[in-house]
Length: 245
Ligand SMILES: C[S@@+](CC[C@H](N)C(=O)[O-])C[C@H]1O[C@@H](n2cnc3c(N)ncnc32)[C@H](O)[C@@H]1O
Image 1 (cartoon, rainbow, N blue to C red):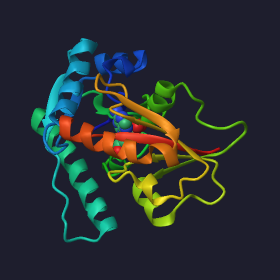
Image 2: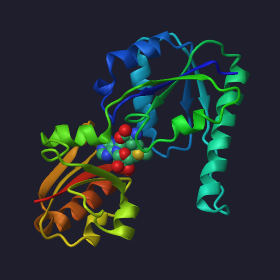
Image 3: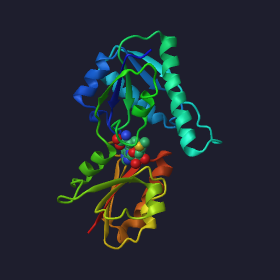
Image 4: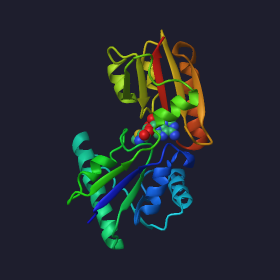
């Protein structure tokens, strides 16, 4: 049974992104649940281990494996079943380890943004007391790397996924659009006229790559840069901000 569950945002790839509060929470935790397999990116697992080591925590590290999603289920049911299974794996791993005291999980970026850990925690029974330690998001890492404000003066910001941009086009009435979870450079589906793009991959990591410009000028070069960077590294995570100019 988990009484206290701490979800610690760790930022987007630089150990220096972890806040003082995050480091202290790692030190105060009794147990750290560590995903072992299933992320498909060994260097991300190594990053988590480096952060844990840097914190100087004496917490008990309890590994767990991610389950595999059932491809036969429809999307919503598939995600729901997968979340149930992950919650079950946390509980099973902790009871095997006989853990007591606060349990910590390191969450990429910030737990509030395109991450399901909070939703998975809601499936635990009995419900633990959940504490969230904020982390630097990919959006913050992007705007900082380009030294730009997120919003235009008094303007709204629309955050979306590559799939939604492809399927629904430019969000109605939007001025600034941030796109995440995009494996396809979905900006190529837009009419590029009058749109500026600030793009970044591996934000916060030594491999960080940035590009910016009018979409009509740079769409092809970002597509090529992304493909080359992904081939060199084996995987890629990128985020971009589009603004009407
Ligand atoms: C599952 S979401 C996790 C977001 C995370 N919780 C956050 O606060 O940024 C993964 C997406 O975040 C973005 N992302 C995460 N880390 C990134 C990085 N180091 N560089 C660029 N984009 C990143 C990418 O758009 C990626 O597809």
